[in-house]
Image 1 (tube, rainbow, N blue to C red):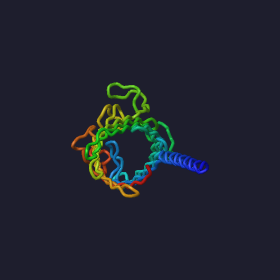
Image 2 (cartoon, helix red, strand yellow; image 1 turned 180 degrees about the horizontal axis):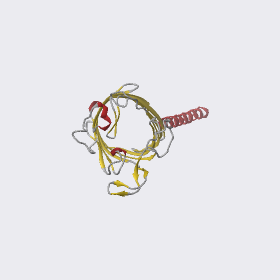
Image 3 (cartoon, rainbow, N blue to C red; image 1 turned 135 degrees about the vertical axis):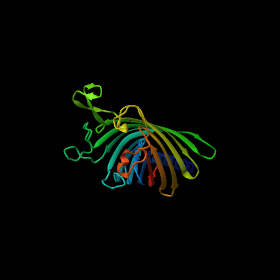
Image 4 (cartoon, one colour; image 1 turned 90 degrees about the vertical axis):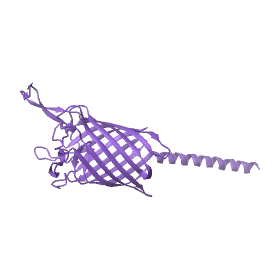
Length: 291
């Protein structure tokens, strides 16, 4: 009888140990996540600015225990005249936990310098014609209310500061009224952008996002011409279809840049779209991943 009892106890211990090891493995696996997506959009619009025309945008992210790396590609036309391409590659490294994300973003624009040579990916020279940009970002997102129907309201905020390359302007050392009296010098702008938003989900995976963006000082968002300015009022409507192995979404995104908006620059001819104040993008996206 003792041997039988000993055998049963031993098997129970082995079972408990196996379950504990299995839970450890599952816990480690749950710490790892990855995702990727492909988006087709009618226009590349960003923070109230028209950046490009029809584009294909690819995205890939891997993360482990809150640390993550992301790469984003934009392949598209400069506008609907298709006069030139507008390629861009962004690489981000950061940490995310409890709705707060802090990361560094490095952008590369495939530009050429004044001497005609191609810019390099990690070229941090403080040059207005540099082909790279470095930016620190802090993002916070938190659900604040869910009603009986399951609709969720979330609030979010973004603060972004450009710290490297391609962000500045020339200014005269001496000024007499509006006339420059001294040498023109390069000044770093540290372009800062602050965005506040509210996201609302509805039935059947519909959602609506509202955004308000400001810049507190002279920056790229006002083409280094103004100080404090409201640079974005935006709305984005999105519908998501969840499939077995992927998510498919469609969206419509409208942005207004209130800074120096007039009836004459609200909507411009295609050739001048870069200076247009009211912009619209519609598109669709396909995403896969493991969370």
